[in-house]
Length: 325
Image (tube, rainbow, N blue to C red; front, side, top):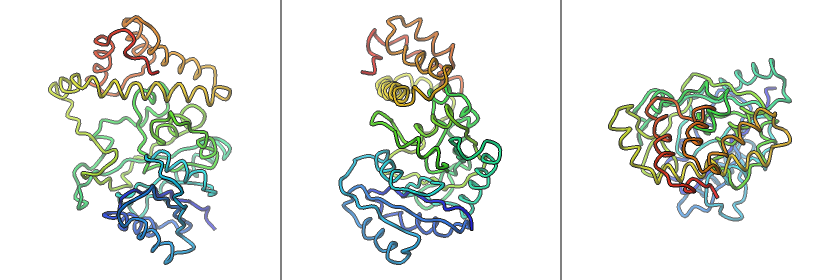
């Protein structure tokens, strides 16, 4: 019998689309799938929908009691991860639709990683997505291309610190990576970037170049795609969003500091030094040194214009403004 894959479904006020997503999971061509769902305090009919599926599919659908509302998807997923016992897990958002071969394709890629590196190494498989509208009409065939993501950058921790290339709803984790991820701290910005940094720093990750998820964009997305044109007007617009990027930078610095604290004893000397260099950007008083660090270690996003924006930020910011606290 094939190994069990547990799909962790985090919901909150998702009654509009969640049935379609659950149906797409249960219709996967990989046989041994179980859904583990947890609602985070919905005020609509989401809980009733989950309860209906649990009654209809008692061996394939289980609900974790809410207990309390976490208020964010990251902590909701962390609770689900702690409750999961499967050999492999996948994250599921409530408003997407999975193509029928998503899990089987990911599992075949995972098998290849395990045959090469063994099951005791933290392993991650992630894929591309197709961006669609409310009615599943294609907006962009490839999310990686649309958002100018370079999935091969997952091999470099410096690049992953600068820009997360992993979308959580496409991931498959093996048991070792799941167990390591359970130490995720409250300073983690999102679960998918934390998992990606772990795989990059302590294991292996494989980007599967196929669109396996219909990534639905609508007015209630918690985190969605953002149009990237690569134009000068985009760059000018981005340089004016200094406050937004400052918040993102502080979140990134807090996450990196926490990651180093949690896993310091298990990280290689090279990765400890890399994280320490990244964190120096929040402590050094010299804007020249901060810019040099970003360039020297490659803590920048892919694409010329998106590389320039944080360098402009470092030059514009007053001393101390980049302190992550």
